[in-house]
Amino acid sequence: MSPRSYRMGQRQAEVDETRARIVAAARAHLAETGGVSLDAVARRADVARATVYYQFGSKAGLLEAVCDALAAQGGMAGLAEAFTLADPWAAVDRFVEVMGGFWAVDRVCTRRLRALAALDEEVGRVIADRDARRREGAAVLAGRLPAAPPDAASLLFVLTAFETYDALEAEAEAKTGTGTAGMPDGGGGGPTAATPAVIRLVRAALGGPVERP
Image 1: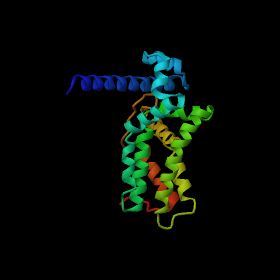
Image 2: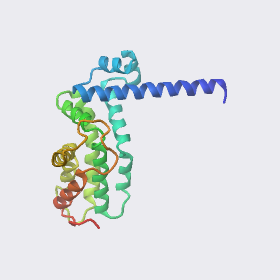
Image 3: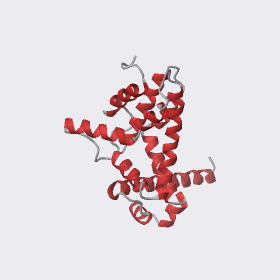
Image 4: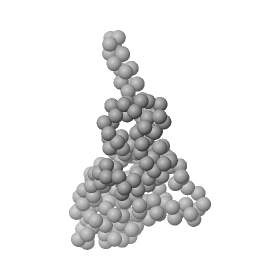
């Protein structure tokens, strides 16, 4: 490796580390305050405000990066598998499972983010774009189901919303007296307490078999 290539690689590693630190700071700030202040995020990440703008371009760009980080940690890459499964109900089940793992990553941060979307137009566009992708996926999978009701796509979209999982997880935590609702990194990327219940709800609403094969 030439000295120039080494320096470029080192520089890129530093840029990536700074970017990750800013995203983590934004995520923590959002969870704690329910808002997104670029000045506060910059201070928390120990960088200049201009660095945040340079890395992300805008508040929306920073929030996109936060959503991407949550998606990566929550195993959203596994969503592609749902669209390759031959059995349409197995595909829907996989869709529900992956969404459950994603929503469980940091429920406090996600809850704050979605609440802020209702108040801030810029944040609202970020969340609306993400929801639109889920709506499209739900439509594709619902369209494969035999004898599904006309509103199957809408039902699948609503039942795989964060609010559905969050409410069911809260109920499970209330019954057991345990939970990670107040903690980041609360078990995302895998099965959650809510997932089996959401699968049952989806199957009942869309006319599927009660028991999984």
